[in-house]
Image (cartoon, rainbow, N blue to C red; front, side):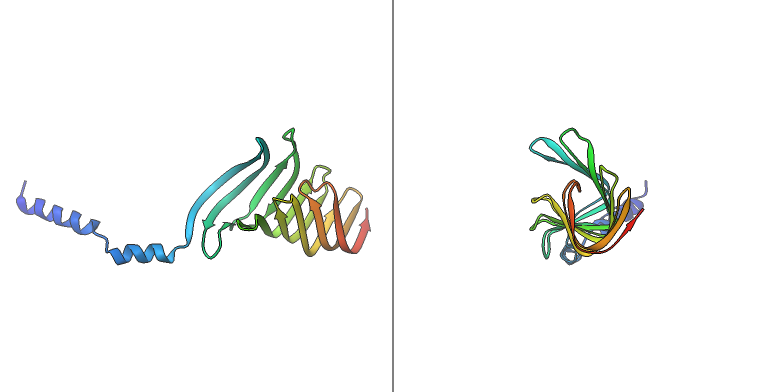
Length: 174
């Protein structure tokens, strides 16, 4: 083998593998993302019992300015009872979890369904996982088997089994 070829090969390898320290530092300083995942399914347990399952096409965890988990492509959440029956589902096109408050804010085309096949539609909901409540002050529409209820100021338990509206603006009987 020709010595010039070997020398050229070694020089190319050396030059191709050298990173400038300032380039590496600037990359990490600009990025606030701590973790990123695609096609995620997470099972959450409380005292050994599966409480809910979260499915998302994309997840991003950031720590600055505050610790948050961002679901930029939406979520599907399946909430279970002790027998692992699905008692409620939450679907949305965007969600963000604030770790400090243990609060999940779901936005854009939010659908909440319960075991009685009642469905709530809105643009924003808050899910307090510690208190196991779901609420919003935004406009909501609730579809039941025999009526459609519209209003503002919705509060329910995590299973969406009992709920209240603060300001009902209309009811349509089917």
